[in-house]
Amino acid sequence: MSDSYLRLQNVVKSYDGRVNAVDGVSIDVRRGEFLTLLGPSGSGKTTTLLMIAGFEELTAGTLELDGRSLANVRPYRRNIGMVFQNYALFPHMTTETNVAFPLKMRKFPRDQVRPRVERALELVGLAEFAVKYPRELSGGQQQRVALARALVFEPDVLLLDEPLGALDKNLREQMQVEIKRIHGEVGITTIYVTHDQTEAMTMSDRVAVFNDGKIEQVAPPLEMYHRPATYFVGNFIGDSNFFDATAVDADAGTLAVDTLGEITVARRDRGTGGVRVHALIRPENVRLIDEDEYTQGLNVFDMSVEGSVHYGDSVLVIGRIGSLPLRVRVPGAQAAAVARPGQLRVGWRPEDVHLIPRE
Ligand SMILES: Nc1ncnc2c1ncn2[C@@H]1O[C@H](COP(=O)(O)OP(=O)(O)O)[C@@H](O)[C@H]1O
Ligand SMILES: [Mg+2]
Image (cartoon, rainbow, N blue to C red; front, side, top):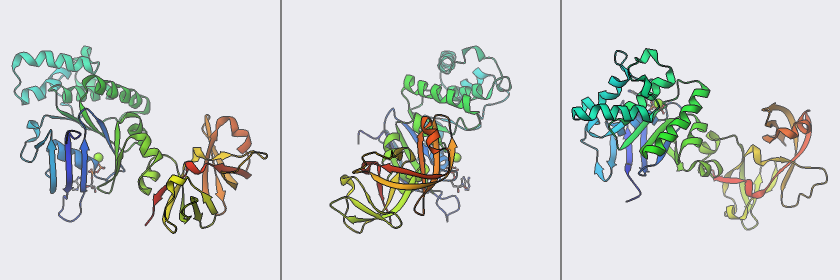
């Protein structure tokens, strides 16, 4: 299929022959795409990258790059660049010798080495640091060297395993922009691993959410946020309110929530009566309702406020409707209205409720 450049099909990895660290993963990575593997620690992201790079064998399943099987292709013959979380630079080598290393390994002609190293260092903004040693560089600079080293032989695919995990927040954001710029300039197919949802949301063309060795959903960031396919994804990405509900009236688009009574949902979500769902409402889609406001068509409830957290630009209000916990995010300008514990009228639009099937 033309849409698939790197194809993983039913890939399984067991380290001990009992538990599957990666448990039947299938993804079609598109040429030039920036795909992020997002998931909690231990969900199988690194193992998946190591199998793509050829450093770990598959227990089952297949890997194809540009239509060709990678089964018997050694790591350095795969033409895949990889950057690890800990920079893994050679401490006794200068920047340029570190970057030249993969070229020597791959026996590039001598006269190609210098111009390639220079171009790679220029790309990552380190031209003046060619003769420095890793210990003379900051964490961010070391990670740029690692990036240059992964790109210098013009790999078909670039794999990045939590490359910014060791950097502080400001530097991390700077490097996120930098990596995206480089991706745009080189156009290389990139698989990026992180457990940081913000990083995944801001950098990726598509995100694959990992949970316990399996993929829960692969989708562009906004789709993932607004239409999560599973409870896990809705919970893992962004802030959420979930109500366990049952469809009561299929045609009218209503749901029964145990302790809330009935709520209205968009008609596109109507199912057959009796279907059990998780109803998801994002805190920023719940708003304060004025005394005299016209509320027909909205879901409106009285909320008892238990506390609030001020972020400056917004306020997170925490409380309950009935016995159910509810989180509401209001603009910072409304801080006064939610300042004290007490009762608030809150509401949301039926189309802002997203339904996920529940077993
Ligand atoms: N070399 C290894 N030997 C045995 N078990 C491993 C090895 N590497 C990872 N695991 C296990 O495989 C699972 C997935 O790990 P990993 O792929 O590193 O997850 P992630 O990168 O998402 O944090 C974890 O349970 C981990 O303990
Ligand atoms: Mg990992």
